[in-house]
Image 1 (spheres, rainbow, N blue to C red):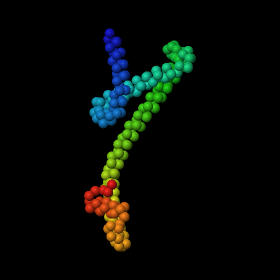
Image 2: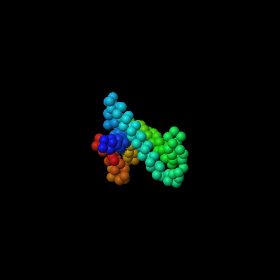
Image 3: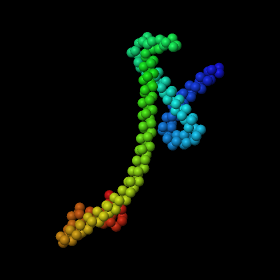
Image 4: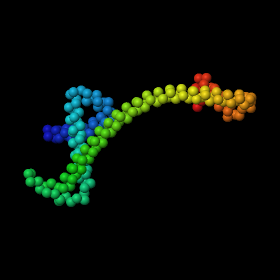
Length: 186
């Protein structure tokens, strides 16, 4: 009975550790707060190592089933233990180990890229706020300049207000509204 409980606890530990690591990947702030405590640093290393080991075992078993085309009687006898080791199991374990290394590298890169993206988004947000103020000033100057040019061209051509075409009149109205501080023309 005691052996059954220990076995189930070990299996539960191997099953929960990858879930905890995935949770930490999805919520890096929680992970960083958890790892900041000295006691939890060792615990988090244990959790990650167990998750890595369980991922290797699961992938090895999956690869072993996908390597059905390798005959099960291929292999050799281990000289130390005298047990038969199949080539299918050795190849599957190697693939599982390499795939776990690749996934670990991929997840670490993803985490570092996510941090860089967050920093870049913050810089972009600040830059857009500064650029929008600069753009507003530039746009206001362009509008006042265009309005002055339109008024000057109308005055030089000796046109009366009712002789100005609708497009020019509408443009003057919009520019005048904007330059009086009533908002953007669009």
